[in-house]
Image (cartoon, rainbow, N blue to C red; front, side, top):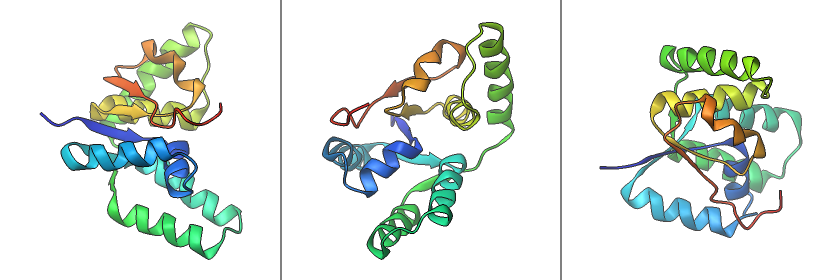
Length: 142
């Protein structure tokens, strides 16, 4: 049975900008036998970054190439349900989470995907139905 890996925005950035060789290698390995995707939330964050900053033509082309080759999962009703449950749980526990991180984690949980992230914000996993998390960019400084 294949595993689905959902990359967060920082992981995509590390891969595209060649900042993490570990993440690039893991993407190559997992792409051969498993499903690797991003959320529409991640694509939105990437598109925002492109609109906000002037990046080199090489980086812009690399981002567009990456987006053209990876599956982008739409954010759907199942993700919305997971979001509502997790956000309420986090608020009750007094552990708020940044909205975009919360949306992305909820999407990974709803999709049954392993969330691939190097972000400390996702240390609140007990509030989600996440399959697992993974850090492919373990060669990066936090």
